[in-house]
Image (cartoon, rainbow, N blue to C red):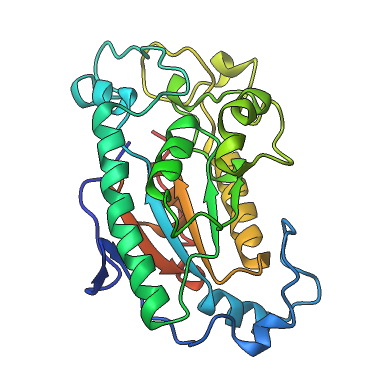
Length: 281
């Protein structure tokens, strides 16, 4: 599932994440500001193509892949697609002790960066977005803890969940998630009770490599479609720098870059990858 190696978009690093130079200075370029109204799941109809391009160039997306999980460790020894592969049933897999340590270490770097921004520039993280899968929510809550991020709004968006491969990608209902995470500032408004991919007839159209599976796999086309919806949602948001805590498959599908667990990468929205995502198996 994970390609080896990461090709960085820039040779410069700020506290552990790579930064792609942006042609616009300031928080939101003037031509973009008048067109952005925020919150919509699509690009505002009033936005011209020039304004949309301007907004995409100026908007910064800081991707963070979640920390190491139970399923990551299992797949390290029982590789997906290997002879006799069997899904172990790690439903909505959780971070391991190692994954928690990774997220806490990332928090130290992010807090240092935020403090430096506050002292020397007007740069900041304006919004934190997480996949509703528990490993992403836990990573995001640890990585963006502290006074530096206390007042930053936190939204949950199901479009950036992992592509459905295994039991680990089956989620927890929104009501249960809200009970566990809302007190940490997460906004679950608009999240369907069952927000992950389902298909009762999945065994008739199985596309994954031979193995024993316990849940439907998400075909490539619906995965592509929701990534496009997420791109439009990002463009329509009024914030300039948005942190997105997500997964290997979604980050790779959006950027063409392969991140290790708890690795982070900042790119401009305009640089998002538009080619074929990857072969289905």
